[in-house]
Amino acid sequence: MTTAASNLYKGIRTVPGFKHRELIFALTGGLFLVLGLVTEPGPLSVLFYVLSYVTGGYFKTKEGILDLIHEHSLNVEILMILAALGAAVIGFWSEGAILIFIFAMSGALETYTIQKSEKDLSTLVKLAPMEAVRLNSRGEGITVKVESLRPGDTILVKNGERVPADGIVLTGSSAVDEAPITGESVPVEKLKGDGVYAGTMNGAGSLTVEVTKENKDSLFQKMVQLVEQAKTSRPPSQQLIERIEGPYVITVLVVVTLMLIVPPLLFAAPFEATFYRAMVLLVVASPCAVVASVMPALLSAISTGARHGILSKGGIPLEQLTRIHAVAVDKTGTLTQGEPRVVKSFLEPQAVEEQKLLAVIAGVEAQSSHPLARAVVKHAAKVTPEQASIDQVTDHTGHGVEAAVGGDRWLIGNEALTSHGSWSEEARKAHAEWTKTGHTVIFIMKNDSPQALLGLKDEIRPEAKKFISELKRHNVHTVMITGDNEQTAEAISREIGLDSWISKCLPERKVTEIEKLQKEYGSVLMIGDGVNDAPAMARADIGIAMGSGTDVAIETADLVLMKSELSKIRLAFRLSHRLKKVVTQNLIFSVAVIIMLITANFLPQVHLSLPLGVIGHEGSTILVILNGLRMLRA
Image (tube, rainbow, N blue to C red; front, side, top):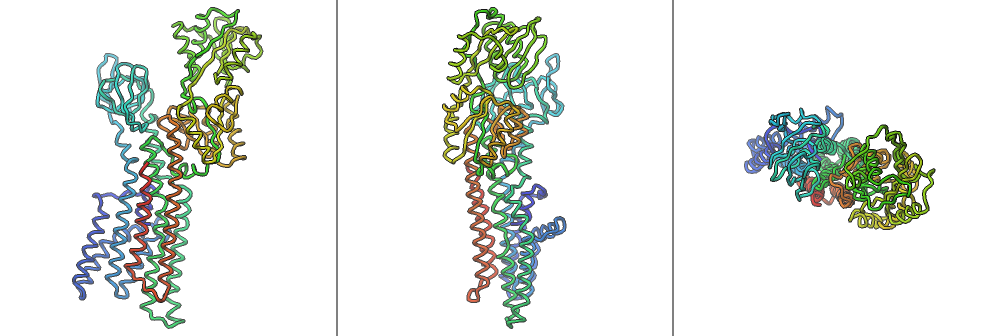
């Protein structure tokens, strides 16, 4: 593999200047090569060959020397340069020039194909708007830089413009193309109260939007950061290959040196023939194809994932997905739609009047962003628009809340929070029936007096069963982690087809459960969307955050789904398995070609010419890269 490509992988080099100049230099070297062949024999042909060496070998020589100086390591460029110079020393100018030309063309093609695989990632940055129209208190529009926008600002987004910041629609309606964020090509209807994302394209209508995040914290900017991280991160397989490259090159140089000395001295072999075979060995033993076996395929896989709304923080997550033996899935917002609704209610005989009860509940739950709290507030609003004034709220993590309202003490939460209450037989019966059918039950007490039960149902995602079924076909153990009680957890797990479930799981316990799974099964994947999932995702071998999740979850995860669809995880698994297959093919093929060419060079009855060795060597490299580019297809 060429140094240009290697440095591209590492994210430390971009070639300045006019486009495709590496290819132009290679073609110019090829032209001088042809002129040299036409004018043979004679001094003019040597001049053309020298020019072919200089123009065709400029980039390779420069890159090889810079790599040697800055990284203190020998590389395949050094082997090629020495082979070409060696051919010239013994008078094989044409063959050395052919070597330089083919090597230069291969490097130019390699650079082009790698840049092609990165195209979907690099063009993402260009979608970011630079300016926005901010409305002042009089409704006048002022054009400002997006960096100056702050949460609370009001901006105007006209039809056909890109949304400059994350925010919430205040007025107007439009269909917004969210393909840059979610990978979904169908525009999404946006009305008052809906969220919009920076970088998305507004459709036919104008929107007035309240900014909710600074530019640096927008979902779009997080995507850009993930892309940059993906381009510079190298998986363990690539790191191993690069660690081996230096010692391998030194070994080849030692063997070549021995070939130059031992046969002529001990066996009286002709020096010129021995020298020629040594130069051929320099070429065919170069590990170009081996080094190029991983990164073109990996970058192509990352690019394909990005097009479909799957962002990978580097190559490690995609490479490791095939090694997962257990998947832990959060319930709310992951296996379910994340939009629970109040579908059942029960009032105790001694309960306060329903409207007053709902006003208190709405006032308390309005202070929480939990999906269950939002569902309760929405349900209460259908009955009464009022919300009680709350004096104080104390959060009982994993259980519910305690609130002081007008001198009364209210408890709103799960069974454990209110178990000391004297609930009626009817209430206990309703609780048992609801949990058996997968409902989440909220208990409400006033001054330790039972008041009501609310039964909430969150619809299971349509693709959940297919997702779990596909995991089980790959012998992956599936487990749901939820704060629900045993009966509700069992009902949902059996409906979806999960292997097991963990109920009444508080956030701090999730990490412990992940560790238990790792001890039993090995590599574990955690899928979630909330703040309480972040520690478990960090502890798991791989964490996947659903796009509708919190910033904390997205920051912690290794893979981020820009659209909350489990089918995207299935695609990520398919990409990972295809990537493993392609990389394995590349490694086996490239090593086999090297062994075959080296063997042919040492067989006395076989005359492996330098150009043929170059074609075999560079041809295998090109085939490996092209095979890796197949990952650009979903």
